[in-house]
Image (cartoon, rainbow, N blue to C red; front, side):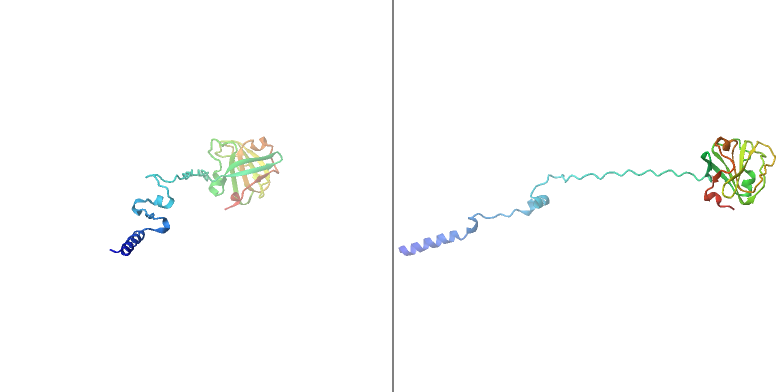
Length: 202
């Protein structure tokens, strides 16, 4: 072989060896990772997460139920306020509105708690008297005008059937324990504040 042919062969072999190299990266091949070997966390953050571990979450506080107030049973009673020169006082009363309730009143009761009583409600002004037949407890009987002003107070003795008739007509009668008005410095001209509920006559 001639020297020129030998030189050409050497040059061609050298050129073929250089063709497999990436001159831009210095001959180092870039290897892509196998996707099957990567976890989702590592792919997203570049940080591997231990199996079973997760981000800590702040626990949601448990809300305690609010207690529902206990409703006061509706026993048909109302609270009256008596407004007098000596101050005010409250009395809780049963309402007597029907003919039967008015006729029966506080008959056959052996005890009337302090601060309680009965309010008689009349559709029209009346001057009918009250008596104490079958009534076992002493009472103050106050006859009231339409606006609640006390027109007269009479004392009822147990089982006494004397009719206690007021001089002026009345729209309401308030019965309480004997001495209730005097012990509070209240009397004729003072006013019993009657709520609308008790003014619904008939």
